[in-house]
Amino acid sequence: MATIIDGKAIAAEVRGRLKERAEQFAQKHSHKPGLAVILVGDDPASKIYVRNKEKACEKSGIAASTYRLSADTAQSELIALIEKLNSSADVHGILVQLPLPAQIETQRVLEAISPLKDVDGFHPYNAGKLLQSSALLEPCTPKGCIRLIKTTGIELSGKNAVVIGRSNLVGKPLAVMLERENCTVTLCHSKTKDLEYHLKNADIVVCAVGKARILDGSFLKPGCTVIDVGINRLSDGTVCGDVDFDSAAEKAAFITPVPGGVGPMTIAMLLENTIIAAEAFNA
Ligand code: NAP
Image (tube, rainbow, N blue to C red; front, top):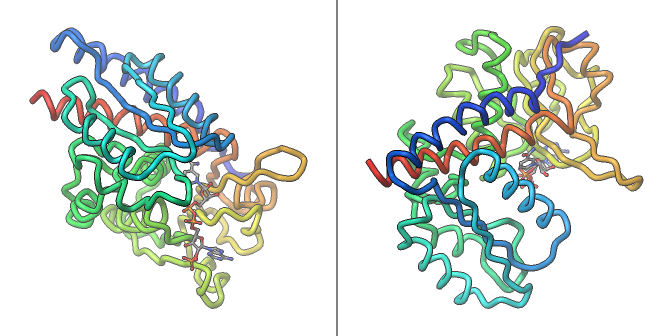
């Protein structure tokens, strides 16, 4: 039976250390590290995510300011707000909660954020720096996945890693980060033929697809590490991951649960990026 990687507990530890770092920053500079969060529209899930980020900032000594804009906000208005925040000395990180309403081009908006304040790590400049292993701000979810894997104590170098899902936000940057750890990485997606074949030799499996329980334990190599990024809301209101937890836990040595795995670490990495950006801004 697998050991559960307790993302909630690990994230709480990380946040404890970040709180000390934020306090040191505040003492030195007479103001807290600042995060601006922009929420456009009333998507219920986005509202919950933003509230959770606000609460996490409060607890960690980061000043969060949330800008709530109506669903019919024009792209130019949103970009004007980002430009104002780009030049504000109190704001060290800017986060635009996704998804955005249809009239707004997400990529244009993400590119309007100063790369120095891009705490989500989605700006093409930071994506390019990530490829060169020199990004100051790396995307939070993949960064959190790497931290979670490292808590197991397994040696990453030389391991076979399979990442399922190739989004710009999760799968693709994670594949780059695993390669940087000297894993041999296979990046799978919806057109991959014979996923089972790739999984047979995978020491590390990360599933970031967004389909409830598509990954069954029978596919897995005994003793592997499984990181479940997926968040899927079922018709009864409960949340589950992309991995069928019970069957995967029978085969794996380590596994993350959903909820309580990658999610809390993503928020912890957002806080860390905000502090990194604040320290760099004032260096
Ligand atoms: P996304 O942009 O929709 O990407 C999904 C990826 O899965 C795509 O690359 C797609 O392939 C691939 N895919 C779809 N069906 C597949 C199949 N049957 N077999 C193999 N690959 C398949 O999603 P995302 O933004 O990366 O998010 C993925 C999941 O992670 C979602 O549930 C999301 O809510 C969750 N998430 C969680 C956190 C967290 O903090 N825990 C953070 C971010 C995202 P193609 O490219 O070929 O279409």
